[in-house]
Length: 427
RNA sequence: GCGGAUAUAGCUUAGCUGGUUAAAGCGCCAGAUUGUGGCUCUGGAGACCGUGGGUUCGAGUCCCACUAUUCGCCCCA
Image (cartoon, chains in turn red, orange):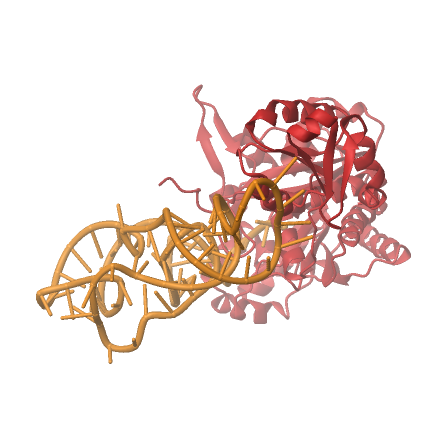
């Protein structure tokens, strides 16, 4: 038996409606903010991620699905969404669009890691990217997009943490201060952190080893070493978040694992998730486009994990009902009526009625049983009597009543009696 | 890459200190007379008990290895 690859999941028909629900709410949210969709390839030249995400990161260093194609080019399955969008922005001259340029995407993300609760080797993200604005109002709006989306889904128990990790101008001096502090106590650091100290000192900050955590309590904070510009940016972001009523908590320990972030970083965590509690993470990346292209264009965005979102919805026992039931089931009585029923079914579908009919050559009794299971609202029984009389015997499956309806008026009857149609449309 | 836990039908599980044809519920299929669902009843299909080796007269049960799953570490959504 060939099994599914480690860390991947099938999306089965019985849970399709949950994904559709999430995707629809995401698209509606994006529309509210005037954000348009972009789609980029599943794989890119490896070089893009080396330059964009940064080769000191764990993602690039040990988690990428990299392979040589038949032409000998090194390709990599997207380990995150932003680099691809940045590449598309540059390559398609989107700099000439009116700024800011706001885009959203759904994408598969691939990382070679050990799976655990809320972590897969292929997962899916809803993400947004804003290009062209260096104003903290853009950071604020990005956070508002995520917040609005969560509210639309009816999710609670979320916490928003924000931080500023500075920019090219002030980060080096912070790194120095941090290194100096940590060097004095290096014997208390875990081996991984001792290594990080040289390569990427910022990363020590979010280590959860007890020893490191304790040491970090007295460590210098990024927010105390920011340059004037970064301080102002962070202050204004907080002011704007306050103005639109989004609650947040400043957490100086938040450092994202992607090198392109500057100034603002943030994450939403959920109490409903296990150890991997971050459901949405993002921030500002003012140097990313320049690193890839040479020209400087500021940007900011977030990535939001859809599997984790689904875990939250499940653990909240928030029922997402599947209302995509057939409006009508056409039940042929005997094989002789099949051709007639196929024709009837086909013409009803052309008129926009959701119809199902028999493909299992079941008895009438079994067909009614089946119609009940698939929750068809009506059943049209079509036997030789009905064909002769020119009208179907229509059974209302929730009430139990039966009525003769001429074939020509079936659609009218089904649609007209569908009292719930109005409610369905609002869903 | 490193730890811990688990592995019996499609799903959830039972299987007592090793002992004959491995159970149950749900689900699936079919019937309970003549063309009618939900409830009930009856029957059926479906398991090389994760894989390989060992101990034993005898292994689903004990031992070892491997594999897979799962939770956690690192890191991330």
